[in-house]
Image (tube, rainbow, N blue to C red):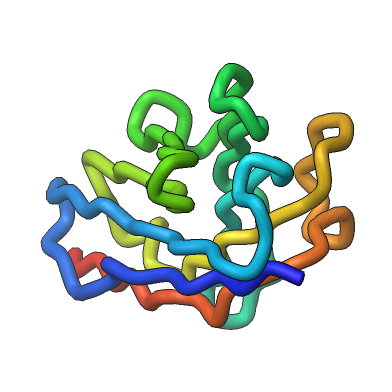
Length: 124
């Protein structure tokens, strides 16, 4: 098993930036592909960003492309999500998730481990 813990979420003004972190423990971090998802009030949990085990492959949801950047530091067992140009539509609980090395997926059901989430609130 792997344990995930998100941090960095807070209230931020529209147009501002945040960097979320997800620290992993319990297993070798580099064995896993990692993803970020978010869930807004009354909405389904949706895909945000993906990074492969090596950091060499990245994918983004269309809604965040050009604004968000996912990265990972395997030596620190941590994945990051840099978020710029935030707007009110980004308000959500953000979750990081891990899965064994497989084909790219945007489906939450394909991920094996989840953190508890961190709240991001963007004021209009």
